[in-house]
Length: 110
Image 1 (tube, rainbow, N blue to C red):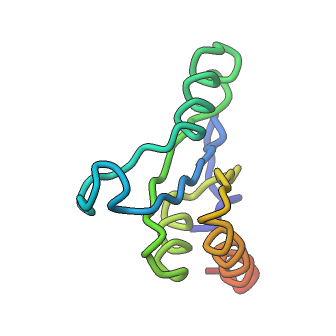
Image 2 (spheres, helix red, strand yellow):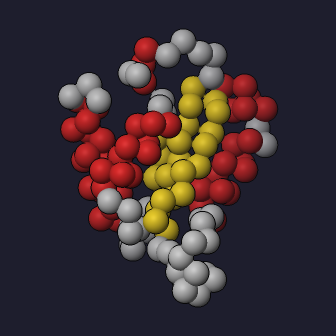
Image 3 (cartoon, rainbow, N blue to C red):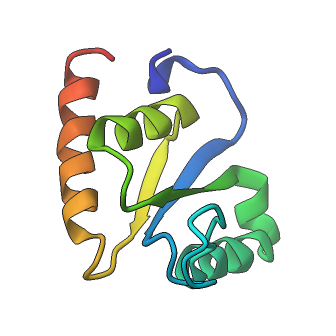
């Protein structure tokens, strides 16, 4: 589905947090980390009634070990109107590479 073709009343915002697995709790890769920055942004936005009236906000948590194609596929599947990343020094490469991959996919029509 094309992002622009949806008929809706609210825009969808997706905040992507890419985290390193096994950091906390130590060596437990199956625990999904919830990064502070995306959660804080969503909480602040959800506390504003004007923002809530216009936007649905979703956080996607992704491990740094996921492939770029998988990251792009998860984002495309979420069908965002607005895309935001929480960028840190350990996830910069995944952010840049997934943005490039998304650009290629969206230009080709998915």
